[in-house]
Image (cartoon, rainbow, N blue to C red; front, side):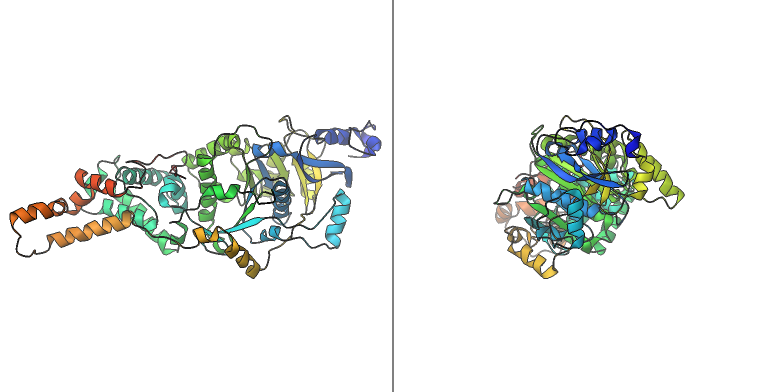
Length: 535
């Protein structure tokens, strides 16, 4: 496109010096001339030039319409997340970021001015000021630098756990029956050994009769699940499940100065466990969905959740899992939560999910192979009509540049705009690990979550009752008088066998009474099969 292709036209209000600009540029500028609060992304790129008079922005109320940040490796996706997170925090909106590579922790420290930063700020007419933002750092199971994040097996649920264990659809349904059984019998599943104890019992000679009562779960399938659990535990996955369970309401905190807290989940220590950390991210989102109240349309989001390496979430996902993701993304908007998926190409995200995303920041794509070229053409088709040759533009974008389209204040898509993005004001790199550890230990949340707690749950109760059964079957001492035996050994009569102890109706009533903190006889589960927790 050249300036000669369209006659000059009058500039929209707020765009200075624009009478010499072509009509398509003026139309783009008009599409981003919002009157309410908005995030500033950068300046328009047109015909190889950066036009600082045309600022590209996202209306703050539209951030809960979800979004996508995509692009090839090294094109600047992480810095885009940092830029958006900074501005959200500054406007009082809490943010959640998953830090897969370990380079987002710098958002807590002021940036360092240099020639590149000064040049970029001048190009996009940015008043760059170094600033750090209030942060909390978390680590899955305490593996890495951060406050430990754990979930109980009960709240994690069978659908998410099946994804982690890489079970097929039949095995996933069978695991759901096992959870249903444990819920009914008042057996609380806190950690992996609790679930393993229940499955072990169901596959034992004493427990096989129970399988007939829970939907035809076969011994063979239960055995496969047990082996998967054992292998999963042997890989060192136990620390991720247990108590104290992380309360996801912590992600919605606002600092004392009114800025939103940026919650950074440090994941470098579990990079080699992609199924685990991607599914854990979905658990966090699902738990937020369960607990947050309906708020409808709000003037600013209650939380914006960035889901990095999103393709890992959808790889080998079952239909039930994909349906649950789609439903969660569709409904969580009304609770004031915005979700941004971060990945390499839009085709990494299923169409039903992609259709829910109103805001797009597309960094450069590569077209070195036939598959790359196919992905490029597919990506172009997902954009609205544009005066740009998007196939050419998307392969020519530099680092820190992107093609943007968002939802206007009225909810309509804005014109496609090639954009040179602003520079983040915080440190563009990791903070020193020692400083990170000091920040973690100084957090008021550290004492609440640092130490794991192993209280009595399914494993301990089943083990104790089995031991009692073994003791009762051993040779006994001379009998006591009948009157004394009648007064003191009524419970021992109930404990005469494992079956009576564990699955007899009288014993389970006793067990349910002993679990006074349980939520009734059966736990209420929701979209992902996750359990609703009492706060």
